[in-house]
Length: 47
Image 1: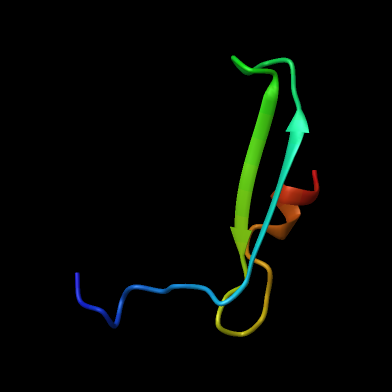
Image 2: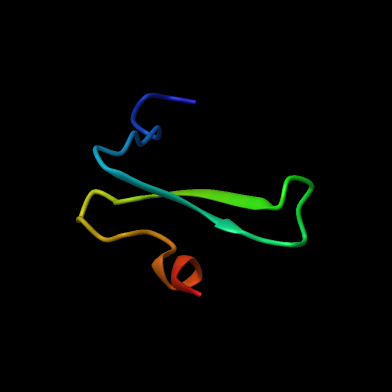
């Protein structure tokens, strides 16, 4: 993989939810802002 293909975001957003379907009862997530400032996977994160 060349360094031109690797994207390291400047900003990320994290959080967790209490969820019954997991081993610990918690579900954590990390999403990131792309180069245009758009929050990636925002629609799936909000639901």
